[in-house]
Length: 323
Image 1 (cartoon, rainbow, N blue to C red):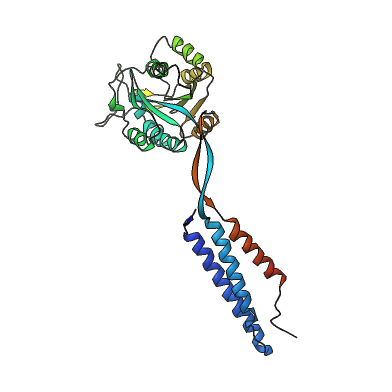
Image 2 (tube, rainbow, N blue to C red):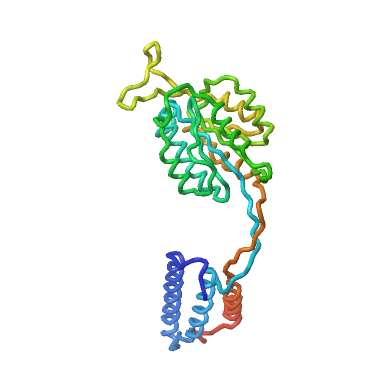
């Protein structure tokens, strides 16, 4: 059964229409020039058929005619990526439009769609950490969990980087001894305001595990006030408007001590594409090599015939207007 790798769409129809309009114009112009000389311009008739034939064959080759099935080996590789997202109240700051959290959600949705062959998990944290979505290949489910993130999901408390990192390490430690270790990366997304203590032991364990930790700082150094859900702004103990600012130093230290990199996301500095590239360069673990049945694309045959007809069109000339 004949199938097509690419369905015909408006670009192909547009190209066919342009070819038809220009060629009809060429034929009419030739006839108009030949008429005053008492000659006929329809000697080009057989060339019209020839050119329509090889143009159609070129279009057929572009659409990729597939007939039959071929067994091809496929090597599957993959890595695990844990997304750790800060849901503290400071992530509602509007210094990165529309808010820090909304901007992060939009960027992470793009990241998830770029890594279809990898397992991705989602952890949310503030004062404590929770697995919002375990490692999965199901991108639809992951996108759904991501879309529901908001700061009200977690109790109010001081942000601590230790719980989410320990949560991921606990998941890694529960792997069966016979399981093949997979390349693992952690992406910690926060504004950098860490009020936790005693993070060093966790970092040492993380560094020995071989897990790459990438940090993404969201916000601006100037910062902004924190809006209340019912209007107005949060105030500190002295009655002044509370201002939250990006604090890159803790995030930079986390990345440096675990062999990762620090990236920044703000209105003036968007390094999210660099984070995606860094994850792309992280080599996945080869899992298996298996054979899959794929349709055999036979575009070479119409392409070769079209090139032959094109050469024939170039070699054979027709003199329409004779002296």
